[in-house]
Length: 432
Image 1 (cartoon, one colour):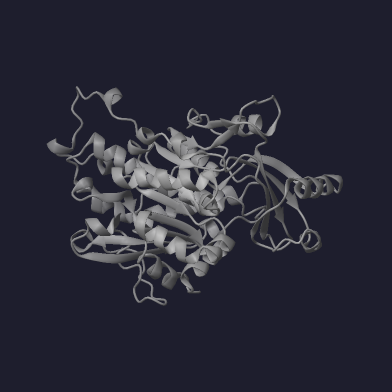
Image 2 (cartoon, one colour):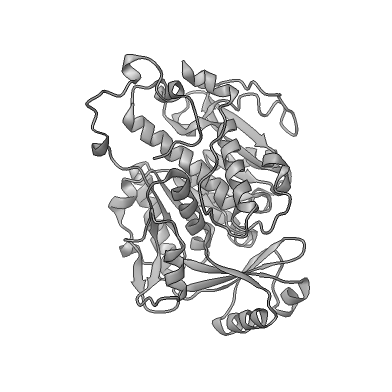
């Protein structure tokens, strides 16, 4: 397990006898830390189009629409003939996040879903596996007869993304295929709203089974909101689902507004904290917000400039670390905002996967926290039960940096790790 970023040794292992690793410690015997993600395994086909293509196909810009296989084939063929296709990639919101997590952590993640029973060299399923990080474990996929799902990502001149999807076998995961013991031992279970769209689909029932297993085992559940269309369709259901099962919610500002009715990102975050313990909100060219809870006893005041927007001095305690609301004796809502890294890439080829990349960074930090807690349970880092290894501010910086790497390339997935981050002021708090 790589730790998220570069730090001096003392920040990881403070100099005290109870915080040192014994020389005879069996690191190989330490329980493995990994995350699990349920996904509709899918291949992304990216294309540059103008608005007229969307109008002809009767697609609403910025949303995700399921198309019949015949209509999808005709649209894909038209784009190929017009040389509009940019590339074919392994895709899916959760698939992207699992891949990026394994690149960042250099460690295992587990994918749950369906895969065609028969794979051939060069077909969609073959390309999906070959272009996914080798640390992503496909051992628990369910083989199903039929074609793999395909998503056509159409990018208009304003860089907005519109998705057309052919379902194939993506919803055929059944509840009896959920490996309970794998989820119970994981650091987090990750799902998306795409899995919850159709209550009659086997995938919906499998997802509900998985989150119930996670909740019973105390495993954090991470929900990516996916697309604003689904949020509007299932608003009441999703609010209840978030409140009952979800620890961390990740979304962009459009999806957040569809859920809460707020336009202001900070007020969105405030309302989200009535439903979940931690919220990651990406706001495009304005960077991202991270909001959550920390106990009054463990608050750490920022050494950076304090800002006020719709919430006064909202970032005052952003050097604190995230906790579950249920773990706090005197809970305090914490907010952190960061602008795009280096102002953002000079040229954004595609925004596809940027939010998934930011979520992967957050998951990496959460998993690193669990790893360190198992390794050195008496460390001052674990005086309370924290969700993250780093502070709100540092996690936001890390998520922002990872998102930048995806924005500057023409792929929703990281091809390599990141340059190491520099130490920051707040880490002095944890050197004690």
